[in-house]
Amino acid sequence: DGFHPVNIGKLVMRGRDPLFVPCTPKGCLELLERSGVAIEGKRAVVLGRSNIVGTPVAALLQGRNATVTVVHSRTRDAPELMRQADILVAACGVANYVQADWVKPGAAVIDVGINPVEDASKKSGYRLVGDVDY
Image (cartoon, rainbow, N blue to C red; front, side, top):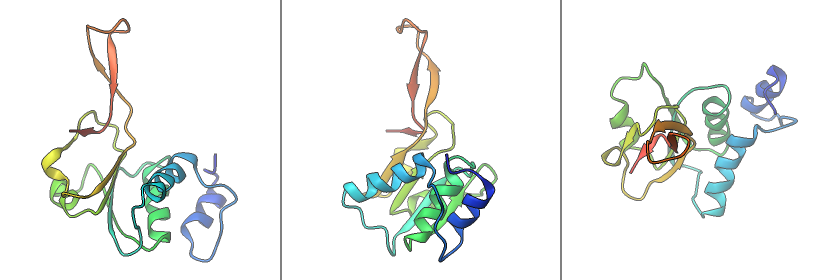
């Protein structure tokens, strides 16, 4: 899974290659690449600082020469920081948190969130939504 402390250390250190890259963060970069989104020189905002997605994806984006800001629950004026992003990776685990007016026109948005919300119309009683609401 790539989460061993030595592996994560190699992930964040310049000039070192981790043995494994955590799969979801790697998938985020793969989506950007396949979509033709340039990373180098872009302003990237990562919403969430978890060990599973937020921290590794921030390190990967920084390793690709993006300017990275990590936004978390204690960040002041988080919507304003997100409005500046060329690339936004939402991984905070809060259903429908990011609003449309928080996203700069033309920004690439990757919504990693998987959040259950009540939905009486579903057999299960819930449906899954992301962290981005638009």
